[in-house]
Every structure is written in structure tokens, then in C-alpha cells.
Image 1 (tube, rainbow, N blue to C red):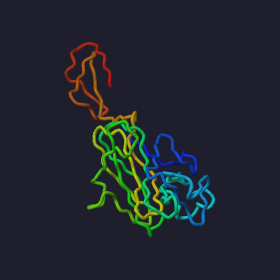
Image 2 (image 1 turned 90 degrees about the horizontal axis):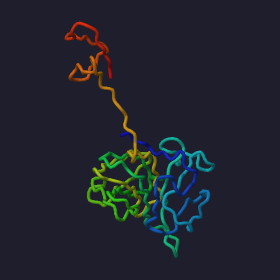
Image 3 (image 1 turned 135 degrees about the vertical axis):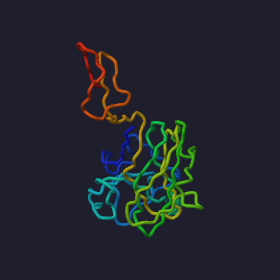
Length: 239
């Protein structure tokens, strides 16, 4: 089946949801923001958010720090704030995929921290059920940094990440669970959804005489000589 890539280009700028995907704010705490830039439609320290769609083409965001992995848009998880003091605390934000086709598959995505000065932690999970609660999902341990329950990420650019889903997986989830992070960006999530079309591959031709197939294996050449035909008229067709 053919894979699809979610690049968020069709999403509304600074939207708090994306069609087909489920955003889960697992920490349920006020979300932090940026020091000198206001995020449209968002109240720092008040709104409870999981991910938000950023647009590099928007005013105040057309700088290198907010370049997307491709196109102009991506999604980001922002640090959480403790309710009473509004000091930064661990965030626990998840994006859950649309329904998958149920086959074993490799998921890839691109991600990066806003700043190399912060180490972000991400985790991936999956389910074979129909639940959209990431707390009920299985953690994919192979994705994690050895010795940790998550992957530590500290970089100054977009990197490609991948993980394997087993047969029967119905959804996957990518979570930002940073202990002392700032913002983590996601883009270009590649996966095979439910109902994905399958590309056909041409392997050769079959030749028929009077309705009877003449070749045992598909023919790769565009010519065929029938050396066993009896005298008289015959009807041939090719598939």
C-alpha cells in the first residue's frame, strides 16, 4: 500500500487541531510561550494545549528558528507551566495518528528542538485497539535512548526519526514528555493509513491462443513466437 506524508501544509495556521489527527494534552496544565513573540490566538500561561500549527510564512515567524522541515508549516509542543506559580514544568503532549491499514510498517517523521540549549524527550507508542488514549498504548522500547524510557534529543536542526509498527497496529502516538524542555517541532510524518491504495507493478505479459495461456511465467519481452500452433486460424490476446 502507498504511504502518505502529513506535512501540515493544509492545516490552518496556528490551529490547535489538525483534521484526522488527535491532539492530547496529557499534562492538562497551562502552556508556556515565547519571550518576545505573541502566538496568534493563544494566551500564554492560560490556555491548555497539546500541539499547535506554526507557520514560517506568518509575521514574526519568518526567521530561521521557525523554518519547517518542508514547506512552511509544522506542529510544535510547548513547555507546560505549574498552575499556581506559572513556572515551567514537564510537559506531556501527544499526537495520535489516523487509523492505520493494520499491516506492519515503518513510521518516519522529522523533528527538532527550538533551541539546542534544551534537551527534549520524545516517546512513541502504538495500539492494536480503537482507543485514542495514549496512556493505554504500548511503548516502543527500541526507539528510546538505551537506559531511558524515552529518546533524548538535543540538536540544532531537523533530524529524521523512525520506528517499526507490528502487524495489527491501528494507531501510533508520538509524545513530547520533556522534563526540562522548551519546544519540540514535528513535521513530515510518513505512514500508511487505512484504505491506502496499492500501487500496481508491471512484471510482464501473458499471451493466450484461443483462450489458453501459452506462457508459464510472465513475458518481459514485447514479442512472442508461437512455435506450437496447429495449422488454421487462431485468436490471440495479451494481458
